[in-house]
Length: 226
Image 1 (cartoon, rainbow, N blue to C red):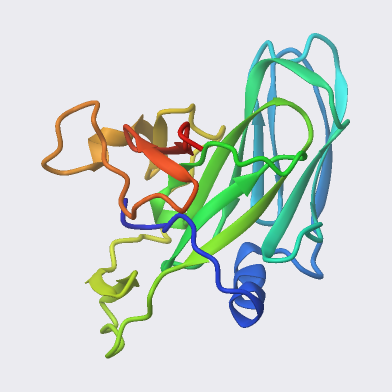
Image 2: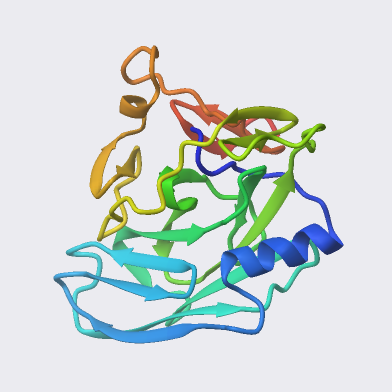
């Protein structure tokens, strides 16, 4: 997974950089949309929420907004209202992180870690699922710097210079791809389809998952061992 690197933390200056990168901070973008049984997609700043068909049984006014984090060391909080509303089908929420040398963690409203997947390598988006409307906070765990600095055609991946493969001009996916898939120039594909040389269905996590998460077929999930 070359585009968006999943989590690692460096407080203060790095957090400010990531905050700007996520589109958070003072912008606090928000959007409101009525979503019914057919589902819908909302976009607010760096966040995209896709509610699938059948998740809601009646028309509901849904709000998606960026907000200041509740916890130190976090770079972004995404709120989805009405808080606590259960969904018959999980919604997917994706957040853009413009930092290629960081891994991404996401925490739910109870501050528990949730599973994180790459949504779109080309645009630096990561996603998680919500079984009920609520909030997530984004935390970055930064990798080692590259010395000397990488060339203009490369990016730093935890101290190693690798070919810069993102394509900001690629098409996005609407709605956010289902779990187990990611967006490849407007098309949702299985994670393993973008892992050259790998056995189908056994995608690796590259970069490696952040502390507290483990790799399960290309998806960083909460470590079941503790």
